[in-house]
Image: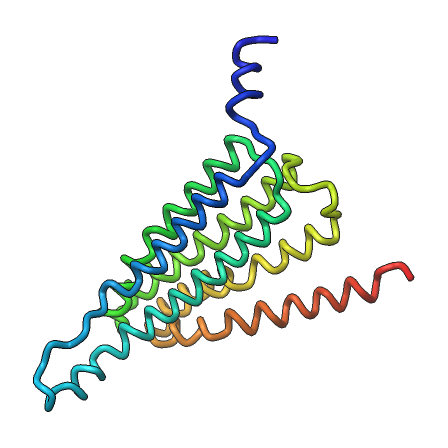
Length: 215
């Protein structure tokens, strides 16, 4: 056995993903907390408070949107790593890359809150969400093909998790050409379809698999 082989077996692979999940959870928590930092309580006279609060609405709605999206990404990460039992260097690197974009999300969120009518702000935000989502999907595919997933996860369950991974990043990706062709508001409105699309696609897929399952 070569030195490189011993190194890989000892350092590049592992049978527990606890440190990875703990670190990931910390990054998610910090990123979700930082989303609110751009919003500040208005320091204005009482008479000007209503107008000042109205000015905060776009930024607060953007914060809520990002919090919900990051929450869904965390739930997806939690589901996948409940099934992924082992790791290798490839999975570690993909997870770190995904966390890079999660940690970066407060920036496009702040830009969107300040420039929500600008197509570039919408495209930047949608691209970031898409990258996070598709990196999550890539990790699931990678873990499956590298044999890092628990033996109890069969092909049908793998495919169900995979199907659940596509709708949200897919909708945000499609919103980019929508924004470029029809404007920022149209791109933002298309995001509303992300959650219901995910629910519908999952329900349809489940129904199809139940119909074809052997009695």
